[in-house]
Length: 137
Ligand code: HEM
Image 1 (spheres, rainbow, N blue to C red):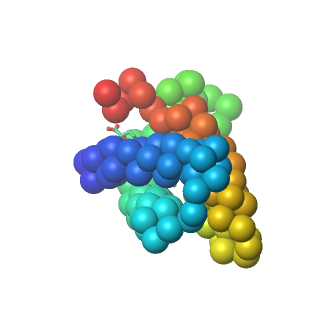
Image 2: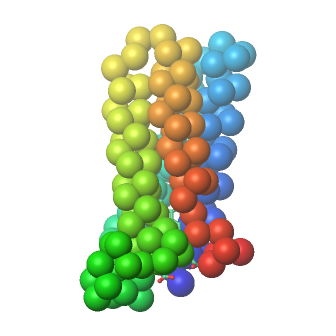
């Protein structure tokens, strides 16, 4: 339940952070405190979702089915929940973490926006591609 509700927050802040940084690049504006905060909140929210996800994973039905039948004998929906979703989401969290730490080393404001826009943007695409939409909405 928490993983399901927290996902709305994660998706909302991630989309906002990506839009905010893209407009930051295109308008060449200053990288202010509010930009820093939005990107940081996204990082924190996503890490919390990762921890909740790990907690959910080992007690999930999909994991039990995977353990019992093996990866070759599970259907597409079980594979999505037990393999693709966790794997791709962890990749997305890694990208967000990389984007956050790389932006700090950038000198110019546009470079900061650009770094976050690229890494968070790629992560957003990955997240959208592997959300179990039919279970969720
Ligand atoms: C960080 C980004 C993540 C997002 C945005 C996300 C989002 C979601 C959403 C929307 C669902 C559907 C919830 C529902 O059925 O109502 C879901 C299910 C699930 N997620 Fe994640 N998730 C993330 C990361 C993870 C990670 C890292 C893991 C495991 C290591 C994980 C494990 C699971 C499992 C096992 C389910 C299925 C639960 C069940 O119905 O049995 N998630 N996730």
